[in-house]
Length: 206
Image (cartoon, rainbow, N blue to C red):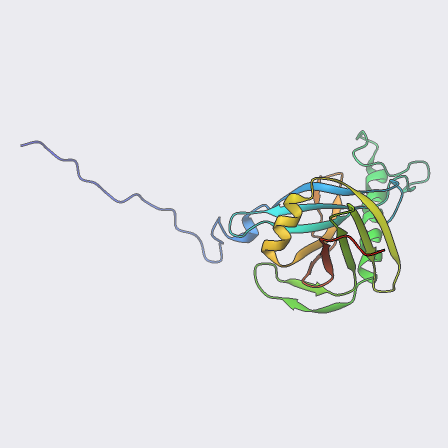
């Protein structure tokens, strides 16, 4: 009779008390993909990029990412330019860049009117202050803050992934997009909008 080796259960490493499961959301890196952006001057304060946040457990979430204006002096002799060459003596410059981004995020936050919370995966405040209109026919983006200041610009890129994500998700993330790290800065500003983002499908009447 053939000898059959005993099959044993694979030993598992027990998690310590309070240790999260490796698949829990806080251990899952979200990947934000840029698909389009407004066409404006680099020094403008209303430049935005449109994209989607991809992760494992939900359909893609659309985001509107404001990015800090370029060409602003952050130290006495140097202006802010994303992804500039990094040298050993750049400590003062990098500190100034970070302060510049935080100041920019604070200005954006001051133009928002908080209103409750959005339950679900993203436990973040909702916001009714910004009104963002994306004209899909004309390829234009209109922005207006809580104080009524509005701007309009052309949009370059492929809007299809953003539109698909918005139609299937039902809300949109508004945050600061950092070109230096090529990603969203949720430590500066991470606001979910259920209202205020509109997709315009038809041409406006003259």
